[in-house]
Amino acid sequence: MKKVLKLIEERKQEFAQLPLFQYMQDKSIHPLQRLAWAPCATPFAIGFGHLNKYDFRKEPTEDPIQKIINRHTYEDDHHWIWLLEDLKKLGFDKTMKFSDAIKFYWGDETYKTRQVCHQIALHTFQQEPIIVLAAIEAIEATGNVALALTAEVANELQQITNKSYRYFGQHHFCVETGHATGTEEVEQILENIELTDKQRDKAFKIVEKVFEVFSESVHEMMAYAMNHPVGEKNQELPNKMSMTFV
Ligand SMILES: [Fe+2]
Image (cartoon, rainbow, N blue to C red):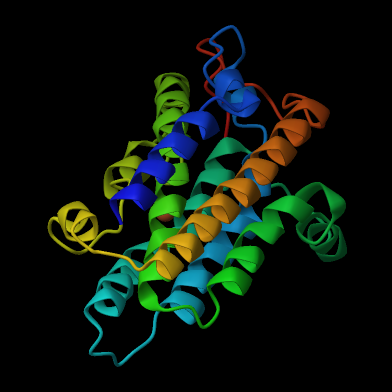
């Protein structure tokens, strides 16, 4: 598994260079604008809860790797609730016709993001647990990159709004270790697992797929942020002079 973990680390470093992550670090841009893509995270966050609950979790099991997966799913199956809280605090929870909300959720601007959990479910379907765990490790690596940066932006925003953000802020970053959670020394356990050539090939493929679908989603979110500047359409940019932001 060492080679798989090495590949994940390499892809993680490349993933961190995507334009959205550079954009999020640009302090000349208002922190709320740097999170203008936040509504697009909804299909991912809700889909991810389901992926953990209905696809990754398999109970009961005697398989030690599946047990690691199962424990991990209980941490990652409910974070979407934090996202909905943050969307409200960020001012993205405006009244919208039900049909418009559905068009956004299932529309072209979130297509790639909806594909993330769908593609991961397809590629992990009926795979042995160690392959699924390789996918989870890759997913956690992407989460670690994104959440480290959203936590910085959320912290800047908190200085202005006095609000804390459970999904985008430090809270989420702290519960996501960058690895499967719920099992002590999981990294050590993973490193010591010997894979067959066939398993390694499958794990490599799934890791590449995970980074591919997340990268496409991140590009899509960047495009959304560019096309939907905050501060337009009755959304007010909070500043230190005006604390009226809801
Ligand atoms: Fe999470």
